Length: 330
Ligand code: HEM
Ligand SMILES: *[C@@H]1O[C@H](CO)[C@@H](O)[C@H](O)[C@H]1NC(C)=O
Ligand SMILES: *[C@@H]1O[C@H](CO)[C@@H](O)[C@H](O)[C@H]1NC(C)=O
Ligand SMILES: CC(=O)N[C@H]1CO[C@H](CO)[C@@H](O)[C@@H]1O
Image (cartoon, rainbow, N blue to C red):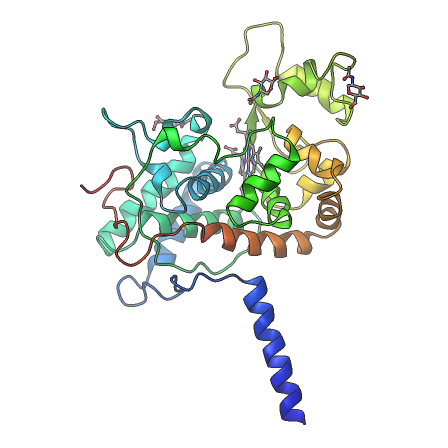
């Protein structure tokens, strides 16, 4: 009897993992055990050093990783530089705001790895591991990264449009975009918590603070003092300075915590798509739960990040192991 009970609880535990920790069967936690045993340590050292030099690195890297996975899958296609004959992913209009420090941490980790295990570790795995480390170093949760991704052979600016979210889209459009990548509404809300760090350029929220609609110049769902302070940073009169940015999380801008959700509850969400999460009945309860408990946010964020890191991965004989993350081997 005791045996059966423990068998049942074992099965229950197993199904818990099967359901909640979607592990890509083709990726392995010990993939580099023989070929590059120090891979995690080498990447961690580069990531922590880079974060000391430039605290913005964590946000930049996280956003670049997200964009990589949503376009062609997590295959480092976003790192490829354009050539005379190919306008690459990172030069699509939507990617132009991706910050240099985010790219630099991945390139630097690759150079460090090439000294110790040349030709072994893919740029796609480097991105998954370094992003995990940076989120953790910024105060966020840590998770194990399964490895064995290979680097993609396609990177085209023309394939970005439609695969990445826009601030102007409706919540239904956001939900279906994430769904098309295998991510649930809960995953979407948890991943949006990535906006607990980093910046947005004025043009991304200007309509909310100047020209919301015919009767309201400021979005009424926005805290009005917050909107007025944003007007100070992003004045309308002068020619818009394209380099000016605002904090995604006004409360704790560099800490990976659950203040993103707490802010939304107070009308302090910066982007229209952030604030909408509280307004829609499909997402409101998730926002409240994550605002109330950092542990709930971290738990769902980890589950969703693991799913994100598995999107469209190339393994086995697909793709290649790039020598330089910025260009194809060929
Ligand atoms: C749900 C739909 C989403 C929309 C509409 C959206 C939109 C944006 C926009 C417009 C910016 C500002 C870019 C700039 O002006 O430089 C931004 C920044 C950022 N996003 Fe998102 N995003 C979404 C989801 C995500 C997800 C899922 C993640 C990662 C898990 C993420 C991570 C980030 C980070 C870290 C930044 C700050 C980047 C920096 O400081 O350089 N976003 N996002
Ligand atoms: C969002 O829509 C507004 C108004 O239609 C437009 O002015 C703005 O450029 C759009 N913003 C983005 C980031 O597409
Ligand atoms: C502007 O938005 C507010 C709040 O959503 C709404 O009550 C109002 O009817 C809108 N005005 C117009 C002209 O659409
Ligand atoms: C802001 C930023 O760093 N954008 C990058 C986008 O991609 C181009 C081309 O690769 C880079 O030169 C930019 O630095």
